[in-house]
Length: 290
Ligand code: MF3
Ligand code: CO
Ligand code: CO
Image 1 (cartoon, helix red, strand yellow):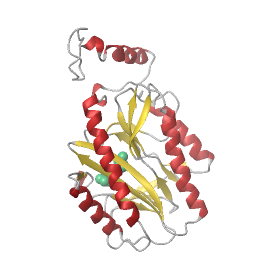
Image 2 (cartoon, rainbow, N blue to C red):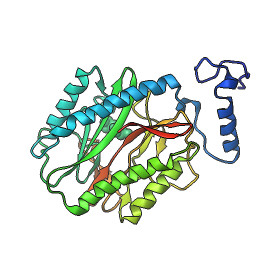
Image 3 (cartoon, rainbow, N blue to C red):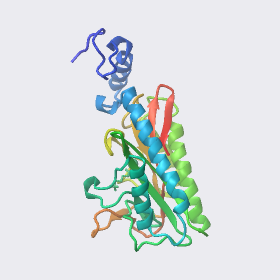
Image 4 (cartoon, protein in one colour):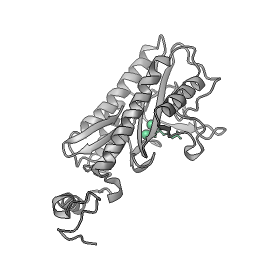
C-alpha cells in the first residue's frame, strides 16, 4: 500500500509523509533490494514512544542503582528481590518480570554457573567469591526498560573477574558497532563473538537480546554471534537490548527441569552477562537503560 507524499505519515507523528518517513522508507527499500533484512514498521518507535521508553529506562537504571549497596556477602537473593519489588512499587513503577509468562519473582539473579533467569530465593545466599548478575525489567507509564549488571562478592578468582570485565567490554564493543544506523544485528554478534572467542570464551546462542519498549520482549532477536552484514538492519527508531552471556567454558546451556526457568552452563563453569536498552538514532545508538 502506497502512501501519498502529502498523506499523514504511517508512524503516527501527524506530519506529512514526505517530511517524515518517506526518505527513511526509500532507504529501507534500497537496502532490501540489495538483499538485506529490513525491520518491520512495528519495530520503528515514534518519538513519543521513545520518550516513554527513555523514562522507563531511567527508572530501571535507578532500580539497579538502588539495589547496588545491598548486594553483599550473606544477603539472600530473596531479600534482594523483595527490596526491588518494594522500591519499584514506591516509585509508581512495576517490576515487569513478576508474572511474565508465569515467572514467580520481580527480578532475575544469576550466580556463577547460572547463565540467566535465576529465580531469587531466601535459601540462596551470596557468598565470598561469587559473581552475580542482577537483571531487571521495569514497566513505567506503559513502557519498558531492561538492563543488567554484574556484581563481584568479596575475593573473586582473577580469571572470573576477567570474565566479568571482558563481558562488559563485549557489550561495549556491541554498542560501538552501532555508532551509525543501518548496521546489522549480524555485525553486532560478529564483533562480540570475535572478541569473546579471542579471549578463550564461548558465547551463549540460545538466548539473546531483543526489541523492547512497548512489550518486555519484542522482535527482532539480537544474537550475540553472527556474520557481518547479515540479519536485520538497525534503523533509526528501533529500541533493542544487547545482553551477551559469555561462558568461561562451553557455550552449551540447559534449563532447570524443575523450575522451568533457570539456565545453567553445561559444564558448571561460570557465565557473565551485562545488558543495556538502546535506541538507534540518525547519529548512532544511545544507551537508555544501563
Ligand atoms: N530481563 C530479562 C531479559 O533481559 C527478561 C527476563 S524474563 C523473566 O530479557 F521472566 F525471566 F524474568
Ligand atoms: Co534483562
Ligand atoms: Co533483555
